[in-house]
Length: 310
Ligand code: PEP
Ligand code: MG
Image (cartoon, rainbow, N blue to C red):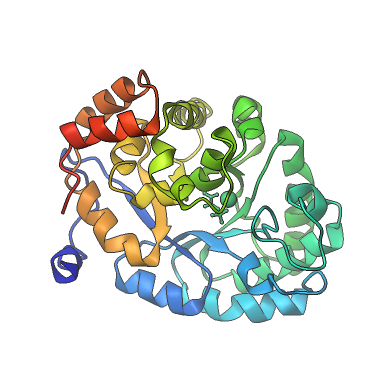
């Protein structure tokens, strides 16, 4: 099966009805970047920078960030890379912070933001760099990050990269039109969004997969896609694991999603699936799924209509 999937690495990234799609990898190390590029990913739609610091006893310094990022960004030279600022939230809180931590705590430490932004800008000169803010819950959270990026870029003499928002809280979805006015791009974090909408524990693995097919989650995702299009933002990327799940991927495509960033091990199968999906059929599927009662009903509908096994 692995060989069959890998055999399509060189083939065009288009759906069965010839709609182009973007295929990126979620990474946190240089090794993962290498594997992702070998598997034919275009670049990274999500660099999780916090994973190297989950045992830290203080905010990482600029030197810490440089050490962590240098090999990764060197390996990704020439490729599009979206680096996410430290996401110390939910299940990823180091011992020096107390729950719930999250973006407000990062923003309360502007020196921690600047340390990371400087490392990213300086080491990201050779990649197609974008900077992404995690767990945004209010459009006003973008301004301090943008200010830090602009000041650091001026200081280092680098270009100012696009600064975008990860949409993964219900509050961000509620304010999506205003958020699109202050973000250069948006990406959807379906893992956290699903957990919050369905009031699940973040460690419930189903939040990463089949539960994203819940009509309440799907309707929020559709709203975000439409808002990003209406605001003229670049095509958004879904970075959550729903982007690589057999029953949720057709629904994302049906919502209008044309770009996903998935775990390195899922790149081949995700390309394989996307190349077999018909966007019109997915659109009808999505519309009908919104009328159903739960994720289980939606999964049944998908299995009825779409060949999801491989
Ligand atoms: C998400 O929440 O969907 C996401 C991609 O971010 P993380 O899994 O790192 O929280
Ligand atoms: Mg998240």
